[in-house]
Amino acid sequence: MRRVRIAVVTLGLVLVSCTQARNTAAGGNSSAEAQSASPAASSPAQPAVPGPPPKFDSNRAFQYVKEIVAFGPRPIGSQNHKKVEDYILSRLKGDEVEEDAFTIETTEGKFPVRNLIAKFPGTEDGIIIIASHYDTNYPLRDTSYVGANDGASSSALLLEIANQLRGKKREGYSVWLLWDDAEESMRLPWFDPESLYGVRHLAQKWQADGMIRNIKAFLLEDMIGDADLHIERETNSTGWLEDMIYQAATALGYQSHFFARTSQIEDDHMPFVERGVPAADLIDFDYGYNNVFWHTPQDTVDKLSPKSLEIVGMVTLETVQMLDHR
Ligand code: 1BN
Ligand code: ZN
Image (cartoon, rainbow, N blue to C red; front, top):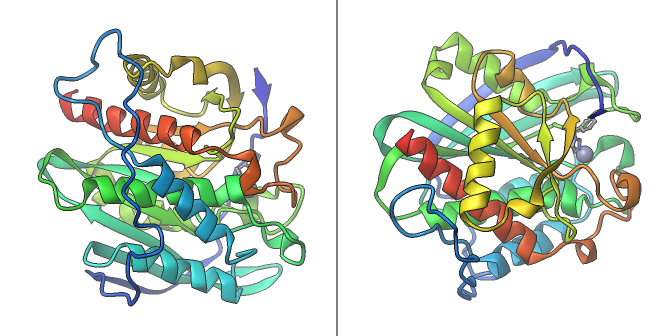
């Protein structure tokens, strides 16, 4: 097993504001609207849950990756970061969106931070959270680093999941899609106390107001676009939830992309793991030979594939359905 890092995080947060509203952000859903049908999944050996397999438009999701990357580097505090927030909101027009905005004090100064949460209500009592960070690494702010895989791929995946959830009655738990902010460390190499700001803030807030008790599962997506897709079994994650993800992958015929390797990674799921919420990190932490493209300007769209987005998107949605039936 590869042990990536083990550490304890501390908080330095100042709450400024939190709003919840039906999202009326300007901007249309025009540029990536082509509705090409996804090819059907390989025939499952055994359906994991009754009913048809989930749908996911991989070409549309990939177009979202390109559009996010086109803004350039998006470190916290930058104009591009703000543009990407507005871009995400523009794609969630008409959806119920909560904005969790606050300010952090770091050794690099004060920065505004904003988590975006799109809520798709279900008929059952309980919430499944699917999360991705959207910022790029602050120490790489003056390079051409755009985090195509690291931040853009998973943010795009969530936008396509929103498309699939929108306008349908959910017979199951509510699904909340969380684009969390300020995941990336303020220093390189990774510096635990100055990272994961967005999720730490939310986990604290939801613990304080009791909301955390309603969370049935927290599914984190990170670095899921690599054309050579190998999602890790991640040992900080909850065992039964990882097993369920593998079962979902198997039902869709995608199991060869899952859990051949095991790692321990302190990612955005940690504040929820630490509070007893079932959580899983879907991450491929082998991006190029020996992860050589991670946190480098080589993290570009040409290394990614729509198929990888589809595999992770479909497995995520299948897992949600399995959680509904659990
Ligand atoms: C993932 C992508 N992470 C940061 N960018 C989390 C992480 C932090 C993974 C430290 C490994 C080590
Ligand atoms: Zn990163």
